[in-house]
Image 1 (cartoon, rainbow, N blue to C red):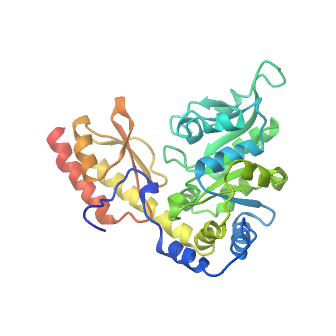
Image 2: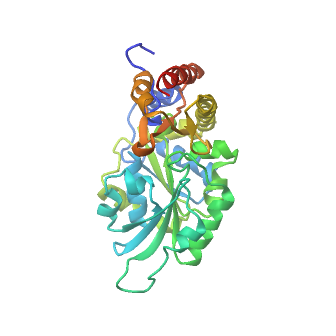
Image 3: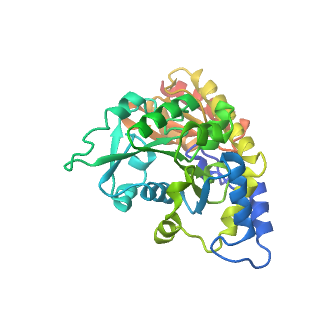
Length: 348
């Protein structure tokens, strides 16, 4: 790594591309194939998804996570309906209002101190059903892992799915870091998606070693009927789709997805263990996946960001977020912990 390009803990989006993914892109860059997904790379990648999630699922590749979330929501809702989500959900906080603008739905935020929705909290938002003066709840959306890095167990997902389905709602999962959650739980991808009652899944790749690409997966294929038109109208249909699909085949066709996720999770645990031993530092959330949340001395934040950049999550509390990536090294972690001890001691 060149000295003038420091690593950071700001986001797993900041990491590069895994060499095996780059090799798959290069291998796909030979000859001509039909465009817009009518190619053997896309067909093979779809089959690979089905080997993980079930033979009947429908898979659609898109460019980015916001596009995947928005179009997945749009496919199963009408503009007079509502999506119930955690108040700090990515769709509610970090997508610039795109879900509401483009789907027309209202997002109903629910307080979630650890990032995870509970059945009781969701049930409190299912109201006004049938009343023409109120938006109609249609979708429950959860993030796996959550925005706080916490992970839903299969039983927790099933409880939410059953609650949604009993009320005529569907369950959407923003799986931007689904691989990290599966690795943390040591469960197959299907166990925390299709088998747990998820209807629509945003499957993340960019945060786990891909150059760029996400997938919208309809675990209940009946909801996918019009999606090819929704994707095109939503400007998320890749002409040279083989280059997106080949990445996913490299990721899921081997255990690369799991290796990358396990490594990132392990680096986050190492980071949390080290920071937790530094006087004046408090780790605030369970470190289930690849995120660490901690309260630092205010005066230490800027000097530490010069060592390895990270985001301030809650400025009044001095709570920061540090993300580990597939290419985070033990040296990256230990160097940062040593700096935290040194700088924190000076400003504690």
